[in-house]
Image (cartoon, rainbow over the protein chains, first blue to last red):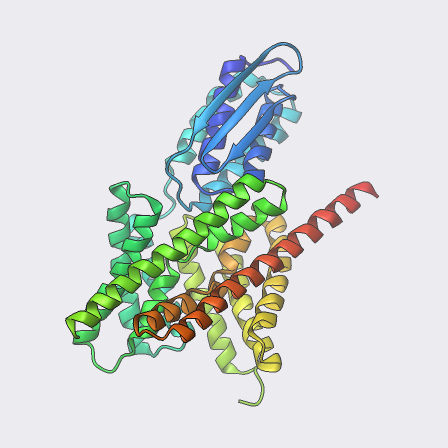
Length: 263
Length: 151
């Protein structure tokens, strides 16, 4: 296979890693996908070391030609759609490179596709905000709420998802964002409780909190630890604990404040 | 309620199904995957309720439900050509102990420390049980994949 320039390969491979890691993929998967992509470009001796906050990669073809790049990852969001889209892309690349097309053609195409995937939004924002309401509303029903409580929980979910999107633009850190979200859940639920009669507030708040619960960090921590990536496993476990503490702190503060106000 | 196989469990299945399809849209998934993930979450919650009815043990029910759903996810995710972690992450959301976390906070606010410690222990035990179940299924899958490649 004819080689593409090594800097070009390192650039694309670390871009693949950046997109995967910043949308919340497990360490094992990021390393695997980066190695696969590098092998497709003809650099079979590539080694990658990934932690939740950064990527170290050495692209090499086994001879003395090699280059190393380090990339710091800052924002991390839950974007599972992007993970499966990138996995599809890399698997397709592997299939195509088996057929040995001219690789320099596929480099520009690959860059364009990566850029398109990175900026692709499958659903409009208003629909995502309303499905936040769906999640919290049906969780309220799941934990034994009535239909009136479902309506209130739906409204709370929509309001909180919208407010979290606005707060996310301000680039708050993860802990503060979750504490703020939990506090907003309690504020909205308690405020609506004043106007709507005959509802129990518990199920509504639980429905709202399930929107924020750290399921993704928990699963990622387990899967990382099981595949032997102890550093990422520990880091993600601590992240999950901290998010849970943030949720408890945010909702607890607001409940206490509301108690003191006397409603 | 003499048997857990009735319309109430079916309704609970539907609520879990609908809430997780909302969750999938929020994390930017699209296409027919959403349907399979939501079915997984609904099964997760329904199996949990059924086992809870027969055994009266929360942790055993969480363990069995998570194990069964993790196996379902390992199979269906490979058929859909999607990463398994995407499936498992969304499917266990109904069992994540957000409820106990809130009750613990509420008990702390009303200065009932014994009840609060009870709920905190619940949070830790349920989260630990989910982790163990996922870990066991993931390791067994790895092992069987390696065996299948060898023979």
